[in-house]
Image 1 (cartoon, helix red, strand yellow):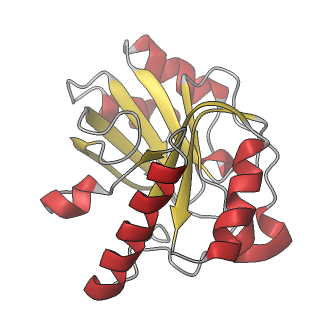
Image 2: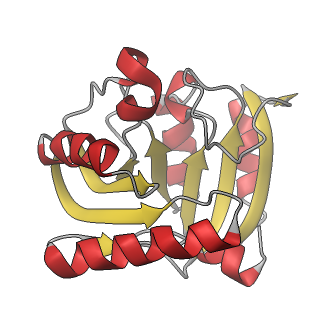
Length: 198
């Protein structure tokens, strides 16, 4: 498997925000989102056993599989190896590819309005949906439509980090206003950036 990095930190976003977690970042993605701020192109080839052995070094019970797009590589057998360590597996995905049935938690972040038809989702169920919002009404409306087609428990709107502090403030205010008007949604922040941790 092509692994960009494995590291130990706190989950910064969504339902598990604040929890200690082992992060496994796979290299490669099938989409090219204009706002992507993740370096996932470099990689080290690792076997499933090597990945599990690295995960076992850390005490957290939560393992977050991310990318890039983890569905391009994640296997049922790797999830089983992580379960054998008595850890649960959460996956962060764009929803365009199927996932192994034995993952414990799915965070789906649809990207179709940003990348076109290549971002059309195939997953119909998730534990949480996380919409990245840049303050554009038309894009948000499309994302909300996609989110409403998914069977999920928790729905988050997350301000996009534009790289510009003044614009970020406006986007955050936009998201807060949206949640106040639509309280079935919750605000998710990238607290790892606020705390300046990985």
